Length: 133
Image 1 (cartoon, rainbow, N blue to C red):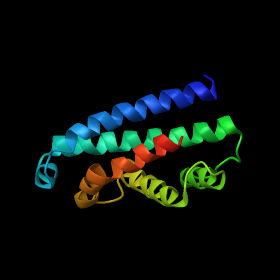
Image 2 (tube, helix red, strand yellow):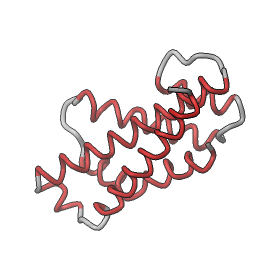
Image 3 (tube, one colour):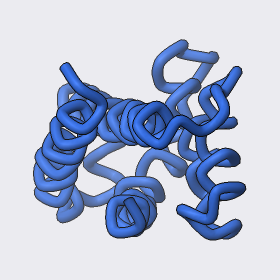
Image 4 (spheres, helix red, strand yellow):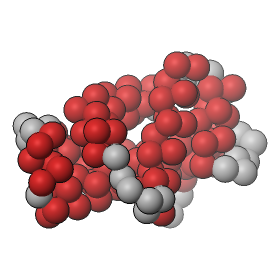
């Protein structure tokens, strides 16, 4: 698969995950905390959206032949260096990588205040990233 095809596939996947997550935005924080199935679904789709966004950043870097990142966060710093995304968005995307790591590696208790905040407010950052790409 070419880098351009990977980019198109990742954009499509991100849009699909964002659409699913938009449906979950109507739930209350209390519902999210109480319902294990709901929590699992929201966590999983947030993880998938974050991972696909990271994969998209990596694909753009490969396609443009920018320097190779050594960490997931570095992908966004490289895109900032290359004037693809602004500094403020870079910070938000690096924060998303941290959130993704917590969900992926189950670092202790997951703070559902943060999960709920990401669900309610963080999706716009991924949408902004898509618009810049």
